Image 1 (tube, rainbow, N blue to C red):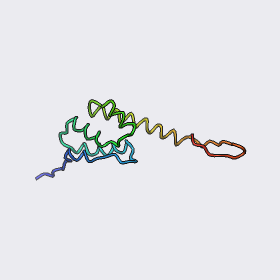
Image 2 (image 1 turned 120 degrees about the horizontal axis):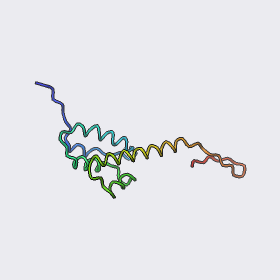
Image 3 (image 1 turned 90 degrees about the vertical axis):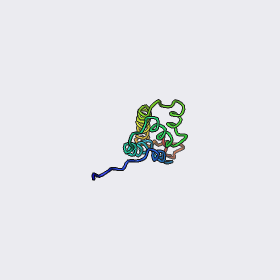
Image 4 (image 1 turned 135 degrees about the vertical axis):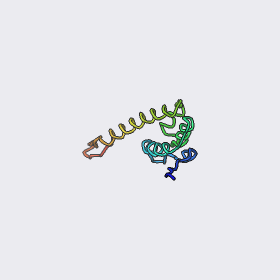
Length: 112
């Protein structure tokens, strides 16, 4: 008898949720690792599962709910673009040096 690999039931994908502070990249990485374990999942089922796991009321969540992707592949393209923009913005904020503002001879740290 050959070794049999266990597949993940497609219903299990619905239980994968984006955490309150989890980045979209992290959620998509976790979801992607699980979806490849599912045998014969339809595009509609994959799309429904990934959408149901998104953290609600985020900019990306609003975007996909206002103008829903037609396919799971469309969703992946949009998610990748959003992740790129999110990370570029984060990098810019982290690279920005603190400014000093001297007001009445006192210096204050400003983050802008």
